[in-house]
Length: 404
Image 1 (cartoon, helix red, strand yellow):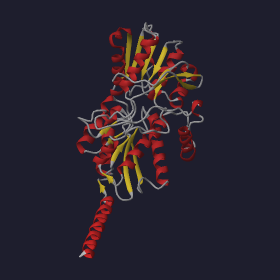
Image 2 (image 1 turned 120 degrees about the horizontal axis):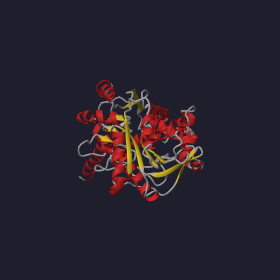
Image 3 (image 1 turned 180 degrees about the vertical axis):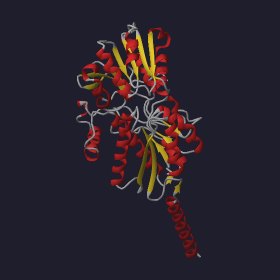
Image 4 (image 1 turned 90 degrees about the vertical axis):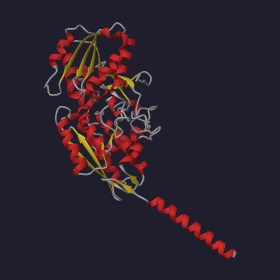
């Protein structure tokens, strides 16, 4: 009798172990995932007025190649499918449909631009396919209640605009402010955060000019702003137009305190085109390191980033900080996919993306981490101001948050 009881007990234990192993081996997939592959879609302006941002797609392609060379993520190789939309919302819709319905990707990762992402947001959410780590800092991506399949990554534009307003109020409380902004969600988001930051002091704004991305130049807008006699210019423009603005202000011999948005602070893509002499004293903000800044020469994270560039993008311009954005986004995507384990479904991708706590990156400024929850789709909410001197940016002050 005793032996029989022992045998039954051993059988039950063995059966329990089999169930446990079986549970661990259960794999769940939606379209775009198999035992050997994860298909990721991407939309990027490789051509058109915002083509400077195409560098993001290029470094993300290189990063996923490194992942594949190292064996993939949980044994699965990444197939990265990246299409050009020329910064055109109608084209973005076309490419999103192709990626979801024809290529059958698991998710859209780092699609570029506020206008393009605005155009595809309802479609992606109606399909229940992740639109993850949008390469735009519009505040609208932090809306899990209405758009649970869309999430941004970088510090949002309203936060950035708010920080710039606070800086002006502290440093030049009697300033006369002229504003240039791109007439779309990108520029208007920055403008909204800035005016909110000024609060009751919005009378400091003496002029504002907008432009369309289809315009070849913004020279006429800059001339109009100069005639306002402003002593502060806030430049809420994408890279091509920010470079034009910096250059034109210099050519006019105008010397206002000039603030430019973070997405247009790249030395390689913006400052070099505008002219280093014209950029002296320029103010911006950032949440990631600059490979040209000597303060990071002994930083382990920067060393990893440079080693990656040497191995996978040896001809890349290290002065182009747009590359750092793509690297940061790819590292965050890698973390999410690692956390997904063998459950590569749309729902689990978003669940893991909303479960990031204290996640670091080689490229984030020390003290800044990625944090999300089901109620917080704004992973990064801090920035640091920086001033351009000679041929590089110099960080100053403490880490800052906007009031949003």
